Length: 627
Image (tube, helix red, strand yellow):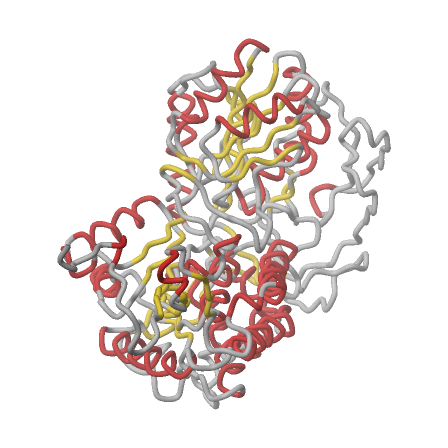
């Protein structure tokens, strides 16, 4: 990815474009020297005991030297990378080059007259070859990345028809061959990781390391599929399980049973803006391996990423048996009526959706409005979570602080598994708070994600900035104490914010703000039950992280918290690819991957086989003969 490993920025090309208060100006920038630190542990944590010193001019550095913790200093909450305090924005010197080369490499640059934007599929619109266009913007600079045609119903209808036609052939392919092609898809994605990762940073605002990490999860899911390929049918098109009848009479007559695991057909996928790649692959790759087709409706703020990934997948499918169109991507933009029409379409056997609660509720209402005609459609919902960390008295405080800091600020607090509340035992609370405030002040670098040293990029849209400001104001009015942060910095940048809650049952701690906002709550030994109740009261149930060496404490929390993920001495953020992912309650209740990786996308047909012309044995041994 476009992130240097050497002490100087790669490919520096000026002049760069600098955005100040919404106006684009050209400014000749001199690349500053960087100071690189390879120490594996953050220096501000006490166990590191290394001071890197200072001396650099912080108004014009890209990576600010780390410092040991000093509670007496009054440092600003953030270090603005690049020296533009009004915008907290540093433009990577090669950003324009990265953008241009990435879009061209993925065939998404609509400014190239000799190669205009084309559909992924030659005869089915994915980009839609005509109709209204909409622009796609970079949240870091608010610059236009490109424009795409918004699909209308004829485009969607054509994509579904094509997917069904191809899926009928795909389902007859032996399971081993399907798995081989799915693994080839994962290999192709890995080969295109640089461009796909850069596009994710451009369109969503993630740091390059986060973008690369998301793509790495696809490889891990593919590895899990390869390990379990026998579940896809082997040399057969679908698995067939044989079993003996438990009825003694039937068994004596040579009867036996079979169970066929068949693909369900077409799976609809809806993904969120913050993770456009990995959650799609979590479902799409196992669904394909099981013999299904996929129609993808991505978030309108991450459509270019979805289209690029679809193109990579389609190229592999086309060259491995002519299965182009098995996976299609349809941009519905902000057309809610078109989205609801897709949800209600009877050709979809399942909808697997990642996003907010409002989206999940709208999906279920749309399906319910169709009455009995859509009762059989499956849904798998992952709708976020108000995730908590619990730091017990015997915790390694430095370990907990480092985990909570990333959990609260990674991806600018825009992960479904982001840490929103940390419950800290009274014995270590003051120490934990001091270290965490130091981490916020000394470790967080806000700016262009392509700039080395930056670890907090933009939130994805101006609406998210307004939601952040309203949310922080509401927290303070409700009684939260602001420890650091709390400001919007201009553009789509905000300060990661740390608050202290007055106690349990604090309304803001039961609300998912989906911003880099973290509350701290103090508890005593006799209040562990209150911690459980406080976390459960909000109704979300995705992830939690428990920091303790006491197995009894962990077991209590892991079994009484209504969550799908309970980590020990590890934060809330992220998940183990290939294993169960999902949560309870308002999170949606579904599980992606895990033991049901293929079963989720499978329908079962049970058969009892009796010999032709043999004796009839009725169910439950019922006899109709006269006595």
